[in-house]
Amino acid sequence: MVTAVVCTAFAAADDDAVFAVREAVRAAGIVLPDRPPHRPHLTLSAARVERDAVDEVTAVASAVAARHTPVPLLMSEVGRFGRAGALWLGPASSPALVALQHDVTSALAQRWPPAFGERSDPSGWVPHCTLATRVPKPQLRAVQDVVRASFEPFPATVVGLATILVGGRGDVGYAPLTG
Image 1 (tube, rainbow, N blue to C red):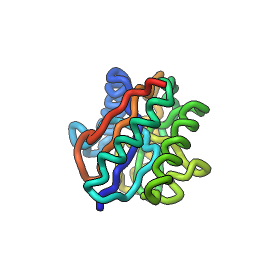
Image 2: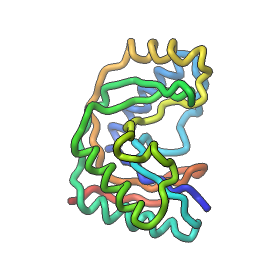
Image 3: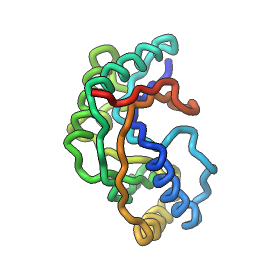
Image 4: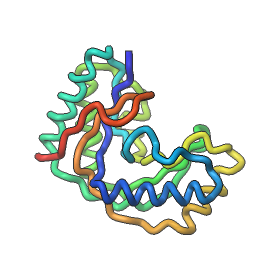
C-alpha cells in the first residue's frame, strides 16, 4: 500500500516565490534541504491504495482537473501547526480553491477511503503549503515571527493537479486545470 496525494500545482514563478519564503525559514536558523522532495503545493486529499492503483488515482485527478479552471490565490499567511512542528504558507480564502478541494476529496472517496482522515475533510481542511517540518517547538513561534516580519503576500495560481506519493520524490502524475 502507498499513500497517493492529489495536490495543487502552481505556476513555475509561484514555486520560486514559495522557495524564496522557504529561504527566509533557512535564514532564521532552520536546517532545510536545498529542495524538498516535492513541488510546493497545497494537499487537497489523499488515499491509501495498492501500488498498482496509482494510475487510477492520477486518472481521477485528471478527470477533476478537466472540470476546473486555474485558481488565482493570494498567498497571505505564515502559520504553524504546533504539534507537528510545521511552518507553512497559506492562501487567503478562495471559494474556487474550496470547490476544487471538495471535488478532489469526493472523487477519491468514491473509490478509496481517505488517507488523512479529518484533515482532508472539507469541513476541517486548512489549505497550507509546508515550508518546514519538525521545527523544535521552542523555536517554532520565534521562526514564525521572523519569517512573518519579512513576508510580503504574493499572488499565485493553481494551474494543475499533481499526484505525489508519500515518501516518494516528484510527481507521479500531472493534469492541467482546463475546465
